[in-house]
Image 1 (tube, rainbow, N blue to C red):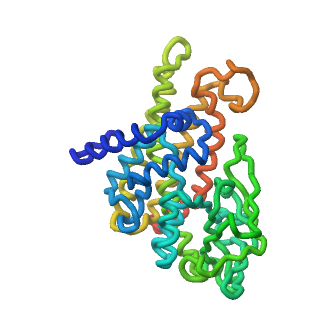
Image 2: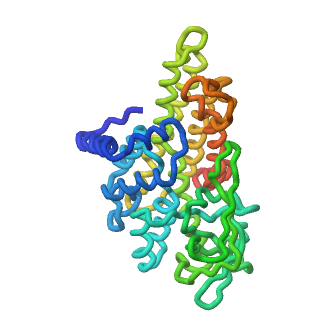
Amino acid sequence: MDIQYNEAELAFRDEVRAFVAEKLPKEISDKVKSSEHVSPEDMITWQRALYEKGWLAINWPEKHGGPGWSPIQKHIFEEETAEAGAPRILPFGLNMVAPVIIKFGTQEQKDYYLPRILKSEDWWAQGYSEPGAGSDLASLKCRAERDGDHYIVNGQKTWTTLGQHANMIFVLVRTDTTVKKQEGISFLLVDMENTPGVTVRPLITLDGAHEVNEVFFDNVKVPVENLVGEENKGWTCAKYLLTFERTGIAGVGISKAALEHLKQIARNEQAEGKPLIEHPRVAERLVELELELMAVEMTNLRVVSAAEAGGVPGAESSFLKVMGTEVRQKISDLYRELAGPYALPFPDLDVGEDAFGPEFSASASSTYFNLRKLSIFGGSNEIQKNIISKAILGL
């Protein structure tokens, strides 16, 4: 979908393009465009370039370091950086814990943590899910017991994305077992690097990658001043954070760049003596994806606009989570289908230099399998549909 921008918005788009062309290293964008592994150093390099420009925390209030952009400017930025092959912004600090600290944190917490997040001095992880407490997050059992001026934390978190690189983690813990399960939860900030008792163990996913982990807490001492908000009121923080996470999962810019690449593949690759795009079924699938992505994009703009006054996305973010993740999965599915038999092996298997066929086929399977997770994390799509039915449809 082509949005009609006004003169000022077109000038901003040109500014973004010029900045990306100058500051985004080609070796990093090449990795992103070819779905190769992007290292932590690559991610931090890009984030620091954005920080120096003042463009890193695009969803923060201006007084805390945000750029003060309109929803359209945010949309333009995300679209242009995705199309250029910029690595994703690590969401756990900037787009998850930071909004919670801004909304519920003490002044001391804001003064200490927000500048460190902006400067990429801390790598944050998310300590939400547990065995038996995924979509039913309020069933979590990780305990924190008050002992003087510390909490003593014991328990386990799982599916901790990129936790092997993190030095900080925000954790939902149970601080009261005598009340309704949502009412006995607190939100703690834990120093993983300098606190004894924290153990991170890898979980290898279906695509062979080490992206997620399980984290164990064994008598971990956390200062009371690391409590965000009130004790036993952490469920309010948790829900607030999840609306931001679900909105970000939609990945409109990422999907638009991937769909454009997919159309280029369909134009360039041939089957039965003609380009793939001329085969009716391929053309039909591309049109379906284009229309679905247009709907996601418009919904995204409405949600971002509604939050412009400093509010938080409401149940509409569940729409985005469901629609956006399904489109991303369908795009990866069509990639795999267009690669045909060349999509069978994973790229790290030793099957010979000439076994993979077209360049896009090398990562087709690993990307497809990795993106199966999108409809599960951040609250499964089934749970999001329940939220939509209750909060929006009143069922």
